[in-house]
Image 1 (cartoon, one colour):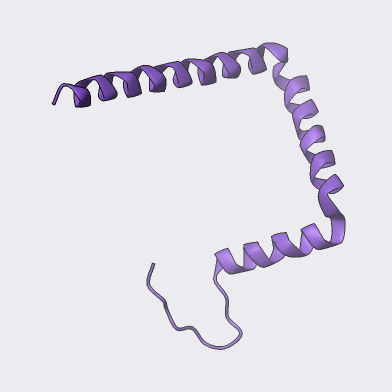
Image 2 (cartoon, helix red, strand yellow):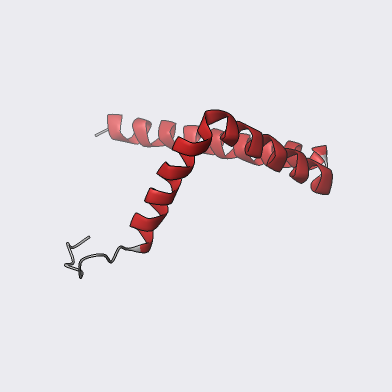
Length: 81
């Protein structure tokens, strides 16, 4: 990403987000993030059910298995050279 000069006092959206996140972390601490994460998880569970988590866990596990197999095939073909 190129360094773009900007007038004094202006900041990018990325800079503003980082600054806001740092301020929130300083004000509220680690426990705040644990609490909002727990509340978010409970809301998703209530709306979609436990089965939703089982499905996304299965999909994630399948993706990992596929990546491992792909890596094994790549290592096997590179050893033949």
